[in-house]
Image 1: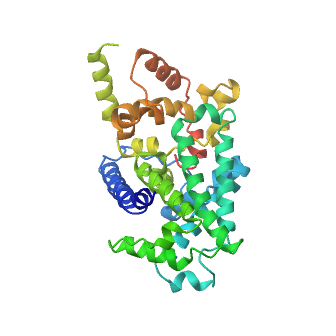
Image 2: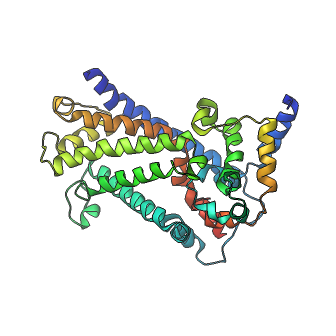
Image 3: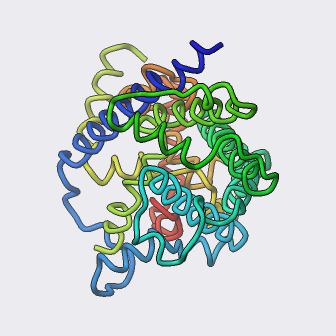
Length: 236
Length: 110
């Protein structure tokens, strides 16, 4: 079992990040090297500065707010929580004064960020079971949502165990030691990390996150990078 | 459809794949927000008249021939071969769209 844990926590992590960075990089370079559209695709009345309005459209989703407010609430909750989780993971590498402007214990949100994210993902998943979203969906949509849900669930469980159930066998320092060792290409797995009672949560969290990262460049999640240039097209 | 016609059509498809078109094909997350935008769909409430579904008909062919995912794992995105049936669907999608751009103005990312 220890070998399986090692494969997931070390070589698979490197493989996942390699696929993610190389795949995303190649796809973006190829896309941006395509010739531009011969005519303008501006659709909204002109407002300047255009790039600011494109940012507004991308991050605040005003059209969704107008046409489907319930979806908008969940989309905003999901994306803001996701950003907070990214900050939480960055903070696992080192202390950043910038993020501690509002003083907090790592992770941000006292476990509620993971909870909100899990609920949002379940909402996104179940709304796809209802027509007409069911007919619009392809298997990729379900795979991605299930993969993200499992990643978030097992990741959050580690947070919940520490925060809500005072389960202190795996501390933030343990995660930091592991992540820093991975970052500096000197992978180190202490027995505490792979033998403790809830290390399976860490292994499952990393396993599903690895799968998600490997799927990322080939999936619709590329909208994370492409939504902004797309909205810029609409703003002229 | 014979191979020669298919190759010819795919060549034409490829010639249309500029940056904007690819952004369009890559960013849709099939959230369905555009469902109520189309006046054709409002009059004839069938899934095939939802803007995202029309785009998906094109996208499935794009995935099959121009995207790695469609070659490695076609079932994930329901990548589709260019056949006579697919061509019929494309005709229907194209000629039932008035090109009013209402769907595009509502979509959150394309």
